[in-house]
Image (cartoon, rainbow, N blue to C red; front, top):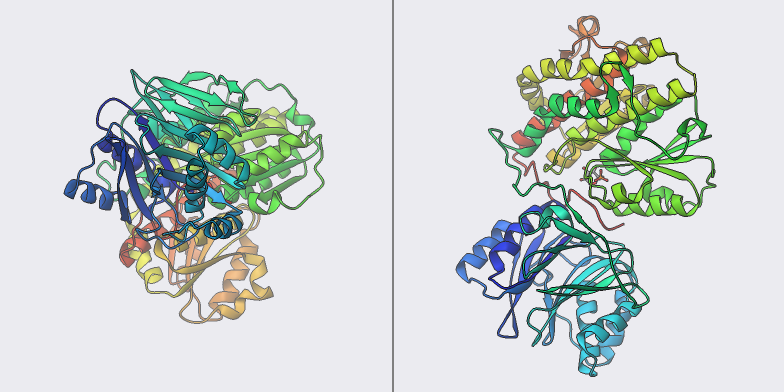
Length: 607
Ligand code: G6P
């Protein structure tokens, strides 16, 4: 994982590198560092922890130099210490790295045998020392990097500056994204266009296997075979402004409250509002003819796809699998060439999801993306990308990306159902109407957010929490548990309510909070019976349902939450709010770092 930035420039770079690192902090915040070339020598500053620590370090000891590289780290190999922070430097170069060098152990052994010494526990330092070894043997920077790339295994992106080579950065992309930005007498490199936004909007993406010599005058790009290649330069859409928190204490809370607006924006993109019918972009294939759909993602995006599985199966009557990208990509499952693979990802950079996409493309499947970042690798590599229009999501715990992913897939399910004639136009319009109502109903729930702050006191005092749901609220229960774990560090599990009696019910005692998501759908009575079972065993139930459901459990549940009436089809959108708000307020009570919880990163670019 990690974020990379670099400037081959003409004026001081340290402050600008720092500003870009802040934009990359979503990729990890275990440590950060910058190296610049000053009179041909390498100078660097590194700090354990977040970018602010590096900023403080640079304030104490500023860094000159007009060419430099920077890095923000999500630790894979080696603890998040200053010694393990990038850039890693030798007497000849400094290097930053995103990804994993898989054969690091063998290379380290070999390099130690050749007399080299290591000062960190990272896989990264192996690349630095290997290139140094080749330079010591007389190779030029370009030849040394070319030779080293042949020996490095894994998925990674690298950026390297060299002692005595002012103005030169060599970069390489294998598996991890890397973009070049072009300015006036300056050239930039970065992990994504957002990091480059304040520097340049003229962006070219390196392709798989590409590497490049970057100087203030531009870049010479080579493909894997070493041939000079041209990559298209395009204007990036990303905004130059850093996104702020507004009046909210945390990005997570701001993003929760943005949902009515961004959901409306997303629906505008995929519904013809006047016609009350879904609108798909022009496709070069007929999705209604697909014999099978495979929905692939990680984390919250995976849970969104698990909701969509219910919708597509019911409305389009087509077999659907919802897969974890990290499992799917290695499973050697038989792939149906008449199938469609759909990739769900906020960042569009998640390594496992991207690898699964490439696997499906190589096997001839049609591919669709449901992606939030339009310039991302997944958005660019799928045949058709359906944007979620959530705007930048900064809080590490995904919220608005989840509900906008749901919106895109809900309209897709209606569209496919219509095209397959498994639903008629009247039903399609009714479902679309239900979606159009969601933003207003969400606003009602958000206006009563304070009740979740009170309920959070129960969760904040718990050691474990169980979430229950059925049908489309089963994935919501999983998402609720994930949200609580990631931001409050409280152990939580989500279960299908009907599955509880097959084991997990043994966990229930009189201190265990059980959060139940029970919209008034055809499964309500079944869920209610399961709730009776846990109440009989003393559980503290927080029962979330409509007015009738809330009344049913008012006297026996610890608390009931009354949700607005909605069509059951739209329930997952609304029931996402209580699980997000409960997690948020619980985390605040526990005093965790809500927007950047420990050990996590927003975009996981290692497998
Ligand atoms: C990380 C994030 C999660 C996110 C998951 C998938 O684990 O912390 O919030 O759901 O990655 O990310 P993606 O960008 O592919 O949606």
